[in-house]
Length: 346
Image (cartoon, rainbow, N blue to C red):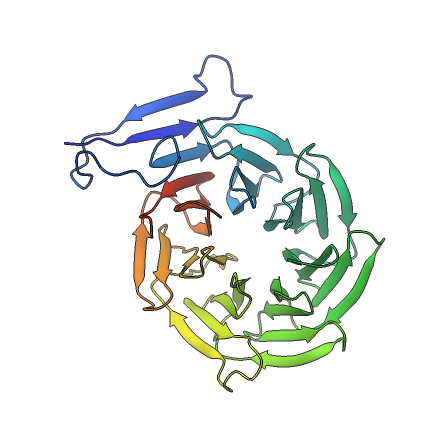
């Protein structure tokens, strides 16, 4: 009968008396057949990354898939190697409150972070140094997103009821989009010509950067929009709502009037009202979402059925991200940990 090794990572600054890596031999797992086929280059099928001192709210792989970044309520950003023992090799400090969301820029050289300390910050991913602080919001910053192409633009969404557009080459924000309610999720259209926002009024708004106005409103969610993500081909927008639905919207020109083309369910939101994220697989065939039931959820886009409901975390799962090149997912949780786990190869 096969056994699974769970590799547990501890931070490098932990007292020398503790081993930096502890391999815990699990009891024989009847669900894992002997000679199980590995699908990734991870050292073990499941890697547990621990070191944060508080809830881990966001995590993303860099474009090459060699590093995973995590942002926590402990105000720190950690960078972890994906290969080998998944060492935590860098910590970025500067925010005065939790890290609510982080993203890599397309070139993988810069990290963008948002925080309730009312700032958005840009970090050099090589040196770990802060390279820009954007602090014009007057309340918590819930979300941020860099443009995929074109100039180095960033959009941020805040409890002050605004979404702001930033250019890393320019001091201060370049545009402000005002709404009546708190903005809890933002994203850039694939062509970088539009910005998507969602908030506590349950509505997705599409802002045209040339006209500086709302050109579309998408209604369907019945509770706050907690996260959003644009598909790899830019044709669809995925939104996670506190109504415990994940919705896929057709954002192509001349799409049908009802742009909500798919609805995924199974995951949960609870009284904690956490801003649970959502994401796409690199091929656009799977989607994922955080869930308050402590499970990692992954759906097949075509059939809308749940492909994976993965246990392991001991707290609310805040985000599930796909590896850009391998069948691997990263999940982060209120239990202060991250998991890297391989899934079946397509």
